[in-house]
Image (cartoon, rainbow over the protein chains, first blue to last red):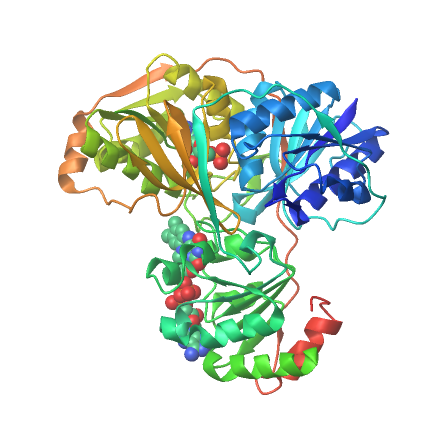
Length: 316
Length: 246
Ligand SMILES: Cc1cc2nc3c(=O)[nH]c(=O)nc-3n(C[C@H](O)[C@H](O)[C@H](O)COP(=O)(O)OP(=O)(O)OC[C@H]3O[C@@H](n4cnc5c(N)ncnc54)[C@H](O)[C@@H]3O)c2cc1C
Ligand SMILES: Nc1ncnc2c1ncn2[C@@H]1O[C@H](COP(=O)(O)O)[C@@H](O)[C@H]1O
């Protein structure tokens, strides 16, 4: 018995989603009185740090095809078998989402993706996940002795509970597949939206794309990532990857500042798990105020530069 | 090309969510259902475009009861050539994926299209399960797809960017925004849909490994604090001292 955690590296670095998965898995291992074994692909050198979040052992397999779901799931399945794991934990990231279902079939295990808390293992185990785009919570009963869980980002705060662990190399069999990875194009410099702690988002209230300067300046001072509502991305005012909501990216940052966004239910579905929501809108009846922690009824063109000034003062 | 598109039914996006039977069932009373937007707007339309380009056929598949026929007809009206409904209650992702894989297994589809996720269970589970059951590559969150008849070049969304991949041979894909532009069915399409074949197949049994035991609603937000627009220093103070987020 053990808990196997797949820790995913992005450009050779372990980031928040990996720490969250390792911490979740190690807490679960502790709860079950067993071991937390971390498995990584193609990146052993930086993996030692994962010991700080509770890994008892770290295994690394060299491969350049970590993002091919057929390869990664085959390797993770072999690691799970070697570790005799009864839980496999992943991040609910883009990669994690392409692996969870595959692993469930491969290992003949139960699958719950996007879990938000540790399972209750006192009786027949059950675990919570959000459904209906955050409008409901479902408690899943785990009827199988083996389960694959993927951890929703920002649903727990990883803590340092141990120290570095030296990775060991594994030599599992890598399958050949029909998929070839050509290249990865990422936007450099900013934190990608799903990982961002602070987000400044704007909607149609901005009137035109050339007005975004005040949003970028505010985001800059805060160190925040920018986002937008769907019509803004659809009309090409902002790039597609900034679109948040039910049909865009779902986020759970610590702070979400919504500027000139009405708060349509489909928009809220992607952002209502933010810890703190600030809404700036000139219409006091805007539905977004019902989902907000702090509200400001004002013209955004007046108030946003003022907020930026106040933040500059605060940062000094 | 021989293309299969998995279409699912979800509550309309503004539907009020509540539960019945001691919080063990979704309360569907008064809820309008729609075709899952990712399936309709992106997966189905891109499949139809590929057929228009290369010839072949588009088959739409749904796992569910006869009340789903209305969304299946819509898929036919948009341009699918034929449809199949596997009759059964969609009790879990594994159940759905097993039915679809069983249907697809010996029919030589070049691509099986799914949506990125359903907006009710947000699982993103069905696609990778089908891929594993068929032992094929899976390309998640495709936002661009070109196919030259033998190989596909695909851009798929990853955190903060895209990954470009090339696939030889059959594969399973999940469709994200950008893959195609929504098509509205026209009168001719709606009329033609009535004459297109809708096959009904029986579901096979699946050994369920997870089941929903109960539902609940998320804890409500406490009332919003309205602030003076002339005093942004106060907002900064509250974010720092009260909310502790900066
Ligand atoms: C199936 C489906 C899925 C969808 N998915 C998404 C999704 O994922 N994400 C999403 O965002 N939307 C989504 N939508 C669209 C959604 O319903 C709304 O239409 C959209 O969110 C509105 O965007 P908005 O708030 O920017 O614009 P609007 O609704 O036009 O709101 C603009 C707001 O700006 C305010 N405003 C105007 N001028 C000023 C000013 N000078 N100062 C301050 N405030 C000002 C106005 O009072 C208004 O509240 C979806 C819709 C459907 C049907
Ligand atoms: N009952 C169903 N019938 C056919 N396809 C489905 C069904 N449920 C889900 N799918 C497909 O699987 C995708 C992902 O669903 P999910 O794993 O529930 O997020 C959907 O976008 C559909 O393409």
